Length: 344
Ligand code: PHE
Image (cartoon, rainbow, N blue to C red; front, side):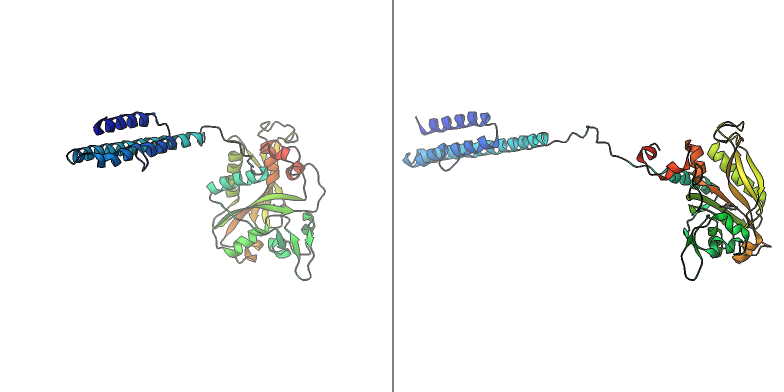
């Protein structure tokens, strides 16, 4: 066999074998067999020396050309195989993003919190800002500034929980009304705020009474506020909460910090005022107390009661939540039983 024949044989067998190589490991073996220092082509190149001087240059060029060609084919094959290996990896390690996720256990806001958020939204549309105040209060804010001096019998109405204190009178606020004075002390009219929050009273628990409950206070003070503004705001509240057909009712009531004072009710949305279990067959749902801010309260915070008037109201939040969600007993709201809470 001539040198050229041998070269051709190596080239064609190398190319056939290269085509059969299936992975990078096989490619390494191939490289060693043909191009490596102990490979077939290198062995052939070593025989160049045994050729005649005339034959040698052409043979050398031919052998080199084959080496360059095989090396290029080897590189190309390596690129293809490396890409295939990477693809294989991707397939094997793939994450199926189309699989449905595992459901997360998600909490929900407590029905009382949901109610407060809904009320804040409704009042925000009427221009009321939501503010919060302390639950541990001084007697001054809970009573005195609300026109309930310490010798006043109305002080007993609130079944106050008292915090031991050596100097000042400290109580758990019995209503959210102390924030009326706190807000007015810190701002000049016009005032339009609502104050949701907890209130505490030492009283016997039953289906509609808890020693801790939530109120939502409302206060508006400006130059020309009248009782009709109060009525309009509460009427709008009733419509937003219970629908466009609702009517509201005012009856005289007494709270030392308003004059005149009223209790207000909405006609029952469930029976349309005809009478049912929810409204205890009265046709009306009691919502809370309200009235025109007493001049003494305005004067107490430094407002000119000749120039400014205002209205205030206090809603029972649990009661609204109970009506809204059909909850028969206030006590279940605070037992923290997940079987109850998960329903909202
Ligand atoms: N603070 C009163 C209560 O708890 C309710 C109320 C608020 C009445 C505002 C009039 C004005 O009973």
